[in-house]
Length: 338
Image (cartoon, rainbow, N blue to C red; front, side):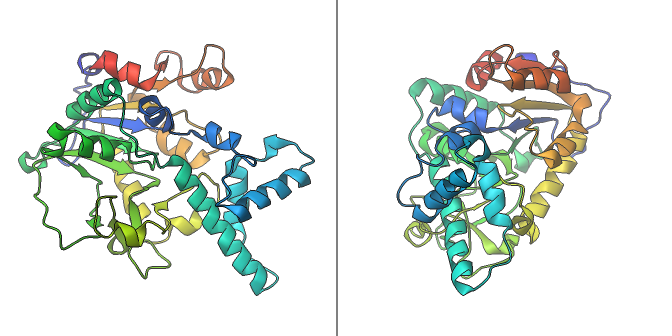
C-alpha cells in the first residue's frame, strides 16, 4: 500500500509487536456489505421493525416509547440495552424469569440483525481480497507486520477468506488468543500465513462451550462455523459478543476479554502506524476514547463516510484535526491505497 509506507524509523517495533494497525468499525463492514447494519440502522428498527420472533423485546420497546410520550429519540439500542442489561433486582421469580427472556431476546435480536452470510459482490470481494493479502503475516518466519483490530462482531473477514479459493488454501485467521473449534476431532491443516484479527467486542462465531453459564474464560470458548458438524447444537445459543450498551461489566468477567484488551493495548503502544477505517470515535463510549486517543501521535488516517458539514464530521475534525481525517467510503479508500 504505497501511500501508507511513511514509517517513523525512530520508533523500534518489538519483535512480538506490529508495525501497522488498522482499527475497523462498522463503516468498514457496511462498505463491503451494504446490508450490514450500523448503530444508526439498528435504531431505525426500534420498535416497529423488530421481528415477531422477539415478542418480549418488541413489547418492552413499545411500552418504553409510551413512557417517553412517543419521543423516539429516547429509544436507542444503547439506551434499551443498558436498561435491560443493568437490571439486577426483581420483585419476584416471575419478574426474574421475564427479564431473563428479555435479555435473551435483546442479544438474539442484535446478533440476528448483524449476522449476514451473503457473498460479497464480485467487485467488493476483489478489493477485500487484495486488502487482506496486504495484511498477511508469516508467524513461522517471525514476521508479524500488520494487525486488524476490530470493534465489529460480524464475520465478514472470516467469510471472505473461506469463500475465496486462493485465500482459503493459504491463510487462516489468528484471533490473538487460542479459540478451539467446537469440532475438535476434525483434522485441519495448519496454514503458514495468517490474518491477525483481534475482535475487541467478541464475534458471532464464538460461543460458550456447552455447560458454561458464567465467566468467559479462554478455555470455555469455542469457534463454530455454519459448515461444522457441531453447528446444529450451537446455532440456537447466543454468541459471545459485548452489545452496544454501557452495562458491560458482566461480559468482562473471566479471561477472554481481559486478555484481548490487554494485548490490544500493548500492540497499540508499540505500533508505528495506526489507521482507522469506518470507526467514528462515538461520544457514548468514553472508555474507548481514552483507550485510543492516548496513541493519537501515531494516527496516520481516520476514514469515515459522512457528508461535508455533518455534525459527526465536524466533531471528528475538532477532536482529531483535519489533516488525519478523510471523509470517504471505506472500500473506496482501501481500493485507492492498494
